[in-house]
Image 1 (cartoon, rainbow over the protein chains, first blue to last red):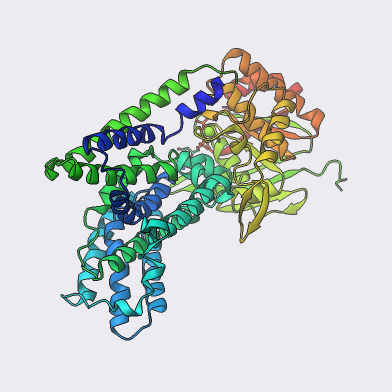
Image 2 (cartoon, rainbow over the protein chains, first blue to last red; image 1 turned 180 degrees about the horizontal axis):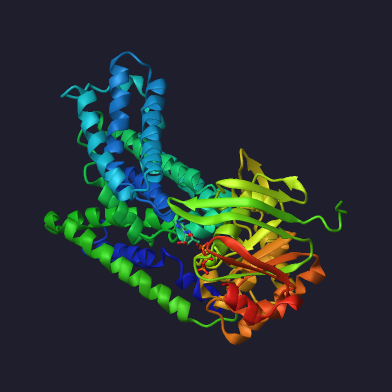
Length: 326
Length: 247
Ligand SMILES: Nc1ncnc2c1ncn2[C@@H]1O[C@H](COP(=O)(O)OP(=O)(O)OP(=O)(O)O)[C@@H](O)[C@H]1O
Ligand SMILES: [Mg+2]
């Protein structure tokens, strides 16, 4: 029993989960029950996958010990590539696959440059943030092409599905991808290598893990998820603006950190990143419902980030100091 | 004419290593025979860690050859060394603190239930039972294979590293200053372990700055200075004084 409590206290996503429960309760009361009403849940759950998919990739990469600041730009270039190709006569499927391949290539470059030249990924991906954003504007040709919505199977990505039209199809994609990446991280040998690489690089190298390839794979997964998330957003709003996803990189890092991922690598969980992303959505939505001046949104997210990290390290210390037999 | 009994398990021939300008190994030749416990000593920067990191596949040699059981061996990465039966316990710890004992035991060599293109599902039950057994085999008493390595004492961590090396049936076990930062009691345990290697048919290469420890558990002593071997004698034919003189 003590071991169980100890292990739970050390779970990286615990603080965020507690905060989320508290906030939901708080907003439910502040909004006189509107917060958890089907109509409002529809709004929260409909937009949540876009941010959460980005957070999943960023969290995975942070556990591997690296950073990606370019996700916001990659978020925009994927749908832009798709839209431009479709405007040029390509059918939908080859166009979206091409967009995702562009993202995979950007992820590869991020990883390869970081490792080949032994520079911090903070720098590599900061550079990539600007380059990719600029490319997005360039390929849009100044003003974005009109998205040919009829050529897109929107039912498969963004339309409302299921009982009461509570969820969008994107939510199902999100659930499947979240489970797949969680499984990859916690139940496979690859996941073991990711954690070892981020947790203590010299040990991973000494045990013969191909750490460079593991890192590059994580960079690529992160970019592809960001690009896919951007494509979903564009299919939902119906036009590929070159400016979408600006500032998303920091929100995604905040989500990962709120969810318990460590900037130093090795610690964190996919579930934590997702909870972090949901928390940010909940604050956004809850503040609107509670009629708080929306200029306080960023303040709240910032305060929450600090609070969650402080809470997390406190819980973890409590867990560590609990004596159980080793 | 050598008979197979005398054929060295590892034979290092004229190995050189440069680290961008630093000539760390200057033509090292040394043999390690099967089932022998060898102490490798030398001052800071003598090249001990460099020599063993080449045997362990962590660094590449620039010149020379390595023979394992008489055959020319290409050790290009740690996996090659492990596949040849060479396991290494490092000066710093080769464990990931945030991971459980069971996970650490199998880093890079995870038992899989099913796999596709090299990625597969971990056999976690097997990882747990085998790590419990491996740890018990080196006479270490740990309750749970799920405890994080970061929560263990330094000696317990070295114990787990040793259990890991033994579990994978190594022929040669290299220990690079395994007693650093250990208490007297834990140090005694590690020394006892090196002494017990012979009974288990494992060759031990033990690096330490403490000559008393080396004399306590090794049969032969190899001393290095400035990237060269300066002494190679059975323990019985040398003394601490002689070794201090050549270092
Ligand atoms: N990664 C490296 N890059 C550059 N130089 C290195 C590197 N590793 C070792 N050296 C140099 O090579 C020489 C031999 O170092 P090595 O670590 O092999 O010595 P050692 O005998 O293990 O010493 P110690 O007892 O302090 O561990 C030293 O001059 C050291 O500075
Ligand atoms: Mg050394």
